[in-house]
Length: 232
Image (cartoon, rainbow, N blue to C red; front, side, top):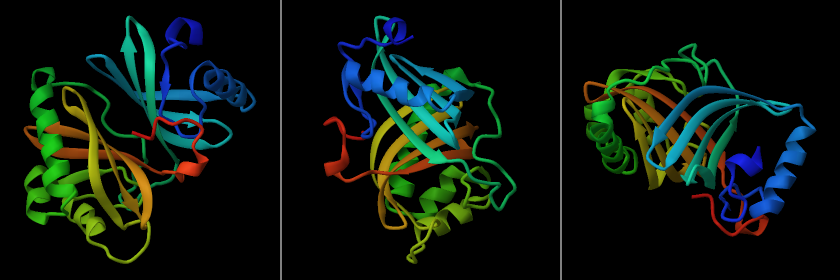
C-alpha cells in the first residue's frame, strides 16, 4: 500500500512518535500489524491537495483520530494526525464520533472556512464570550467527551481556571481545512495546563456552528520526538 499511495522519498511525517521517511513507514506498519488493526472511516473530506478524515481506530484500544494528508501527483507526501482515547458518552449522551456525516453546501466552502478561522481567532483564543455566542448556536451539538451541549458549556471550559479536563486554552491556529459545511481547525494550546494539539471539526448551518467534534493530544517534549518536523 505504501508504495502505491505514499511517496516514500518525499514523505514528511509530523507524528512525533514516528520516524521519518521509509524507515518510519516500515516501522509503523510493522508495529500496527501486531495489533490486528481496524480503521472505520466516519467522515472523509477533500480540500485541494489535502485529504482529511475523522476515524475510529481499533489498535489494541479504541481511539478517535483525525488524519490529514497532503498529496502531490496522486501520492501522499506529508502527514499530520491527532489521536485521543475513545471516551463517552458525554453529559449530553453523545459519543466522540457519532452525529451528522453528510457533506453539503459546497458553494459555501470558503465562506465557512473564513467563519471558522474567525471563530478561532476572535472567540476561542481570546476566550471572548460575545464573539463565541455570535458564531456558535446556543443549541450547539457537542461531541467533546467532557462537555454538555450549548455555547455556554464551551465558553465555561475556556474560562475555567481550575485544573481539569474542562480547562481549555487556545494559543495558536495553525491550519484550516474545509469542504462544504464542515471545517477542521488545527490549533495549539493547553488542556489542564498541559501543552496540547487541538483538532476541532465544526459543522455549519446558515453561517452558525451547529455541531462540534474534537480530539486533544498531549504534545511530547522535544527530547522524545522521533523526527524533527514538529507536530504542526
